[in-house]
Image (cartoon, rainbow, N blue to C red; front, side, top):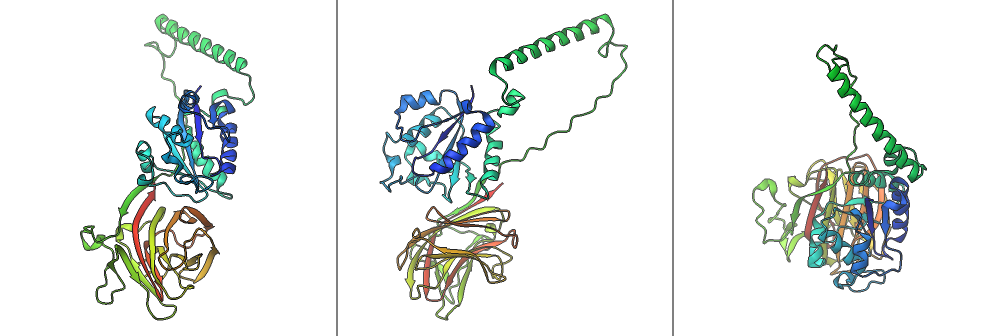
Length: 404
């Protein structure tokens, strides 16, 4: 029977994998969901056997998917790594693969993947976030999976009916259909019935077409290394360069933003107009080259009404390892915290990721989820970078993906 193969790395997102397995089994039936048992390390022939009936693969990707549960060195580089084998087998069979990001993880970039899995980096991912978003995200995922595997209720009509009884009902239905078709042909040949030349036209009430909610997918609209080696084209498609003041421009291998010497002053460097959007994922890597105040903040803004960034949201981190999301119009801190995942001090390199879909905003640093908030203040707008007094940050590897 057609089945869903669930791939995940033990120690990365075991709890999420267990919950997702239960949800999928309830919707499609336990026989229709295959996953590797925790602690099992099968070889390629065993995985090929498990995937024999698979028609789609869900690859759960969490914060430890690349580096392993014990921070081991790149387990995907090992040719016998079970996760690598699972995906290699699936791709060789040309099975559809749906990456599902959990716990604030970001999609792995192609340079960090073995050659056989480079195509994974270009696939549109689904989100499987923690509560309160878990059920909604899983529902979207199951709608996508329904294109490949029929849900249990749809396949069997009534949950709990035995396989034998289902087969008997199916055979009976086919026999009735055949007899009905034969009756129609006989009536037409006899010159009676709605298909005869003398038949009166009958009215048919059209069945309303069901509305299918499409699972949102991510489409990359801008992937910019933010270095001076890039030809940025027209003015409408450039990052701000302020040569007079020297606060926004290209230096030190990237897009450098210099904070003011004035206390509590924020330097604003807006991105190109092409970056203005609402439902999107923003990812950028920043390197801190100067930090005279460990409490000062730097990061990015998004959904601002214009390049002045007097409204919208600000996602900040600090040299001491704190993070916060601010409503710029009101100055209110929506969520905040501290995390060891944030690299600290001068020279620190951090990758900031914002997932904004409708009013739901999820923040991550270095692939680790910081927090989530639901806020309706700003729906779409401009984005760019922010640096407070006493700091200098260099931004590279900017990627913008839109949910469609």
